[in-house]
Length: 583
Image (tube, rainbow, N blue to C red):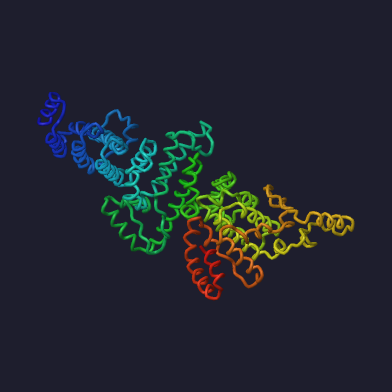
């Protein structure tokens, strides 16, 4: 036989030529008599073989296995079959099935190998996905797909490897691929979580620790999850594209062939049942999406992944969850961490509170604690200031709480950059507009609180003539005393309502002209508070030294025209003074 001759040649020379390899493939496709060529071709599907040899073998093997896949038994049946008198045909199919499983494993090893060429890896991925498409009796082969994702996640591939990009760009637009991706990632996340529970590690990785295989796996899980497109809104005209024509979303029926089932799928698009089918698809996808993300968020996320998740959670995850309130534990835990993590979790927590009815009693206390000088230099400060303004918009906010935020912000105005002082002026302006009850912070005279501002105990002291006289005497001796405790983290105990916004008066002489000018407009607005509108915080929230510097030339160009007009009205001496002052 020709194949025996080629085998003897291989024993003599130790390898096949490319033409001989092509001959082996043609023989395999021609007759079962050459089925022993199958293991020979399989041996070339490895990283040790030259790429063109691997590609030639792969083409022959794919052509051989593709028409046989619907007839082959499942892998589980092949392992559990204990028939004492097996049919020769059954033995043959079981053996071919084992070789197919070997081929799939070899292809996956090739795909995740960093030593393989990218062109070959891309072809290998396409072959794997073709087997996934019809490797389960014509249906989507979820076991092969799960094995692929499992190997990718647990491999040493880099986070931004090309294989992840190809998978996302070529196949994540298919609804059934997305469905099984969510299902597989949920299983992988639960497996990783079980391993971490045995180790007893903390919830978040420390940046100072070396990157472990666990951390790398979590990075790749997040990469895959974040690149899956969101499910579009379901309607009568929606048409979900599927990688496998049969799909998991088509009702089971007793059709004999692939063509009949495709005809049924084509007809089902035109039937009145399609609206209900699309709704069911949306429900199933939302359920899988929710399980995958909840399982992922239970892992000990590395700090960089933790931050990336918090930044996009309110836009990319919460709107698509079946029950968004399930994130309350994760978000409240993140909010309680403090620092930049709390700032980044504020957006999602605010969405849960305003849209999904989450109750968080200590929300404003935690928000008050976030007001530190470092927040004015944080990367996500713009979004934080906008959310801070939104959170303080409610007219039901207690006066002591509004006063505490006003006073805390005004104290920060003394030590933050000019861009931060501009944001503070805008925030305090809006607070004073919304809450007339704290206007005493601006109009207080002599450092004493009025009877309306006093607490119950203070009112009793005012009624007592001796105590009120002593208080007046103390106030006269120390007119500059400030009752506000800037170190107090509880806004109830900060005594802000007994203080005043004296810090704002210093902004009148701020070294940065835009701040002093903005304060003057703020002061004018307070004089006619009922006629002025709130300031859009977003116009100032992303400010920096660069934005202030870039905005100044336009102001001074206008100032040059004004000074030039004034110069003609001045005496010669005054002109010299004006010119030297401007220089």
